Length: 408
Image (tube, helix red, strand yellow):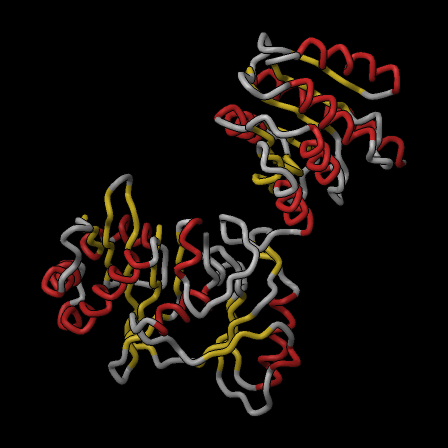
């Protein structure tokens, strides 16, 4: 679970890890007060490289700040709509550095660099002597002498003793909150010698949200992003019955044209990889698994078909089920959901690659549904996932071309 910059900074400041610049979060230009002076306006999204995307602006007065807020709230950065802007005081910066604690494989690693404000990989490639990555054993922790040694080797020089407590606090914070990543970039030294976290990237284990005190993170996907309306509906659908999962995994992807109803597990990930690698564009990616009821799968299908963009194919993809009743999920679930979606375009190709209990019965019902005008393509395990992906893309492209011709 990712936190927004303003959430991460609040946590770091509240727990005494490091100071942060004075600031406030606004959701409208009208919240900008008169008389505000030099300020940095920062779009709050869950992705890096905001400055390169135009998501960080320098402002001089209240009118300038209001214009910047209006501009930022009208932006999307890597597909995420900006809904909040962090307004922060400008600091007189003397030096920018980098600190983080994360996992590399199964090892817990502290990373420090005397150069910050840019991608740490750039520093590693250009001046590797200014980056130190030190494995730390959780049972031993990080003491001040070790922290100071890491910083000295990373080129902090005379600043190493001052930054060592910050690095130690950062490590303790990481352990306390079951974090996956805690990064300060840049850690800034001002011309008066004070140290501030001018940005914070924090990712927590999905099950560790209850550890956060004093901050309400609301409804959020595991990636941190706030769910769309359809993603929220899918989560609600999954809770209507405890049997199996149908909506727990649901992603709405802007600009796609293929709905993926996957049967879960490694097959789902392989299918998604194959589709992307061949140029396919998913609109919805969702899973049903663990022998869910037909009612849950039907609800999930109807939610997926509410996608606001144009759909050119549906891909029902999975391996061979051992316990999931294929007839229940395909017929009482997916086919029933399609039938109950009144606006569904029957010309949309539906490619099915599935096997398992009662599969032949299900396939026969789907073949009969062709007489109702539904455009089913049914395949079993003899068709590889990659070949099924090629078929989906081919049929989606055909449908797209026909749709475009009809619109002319």
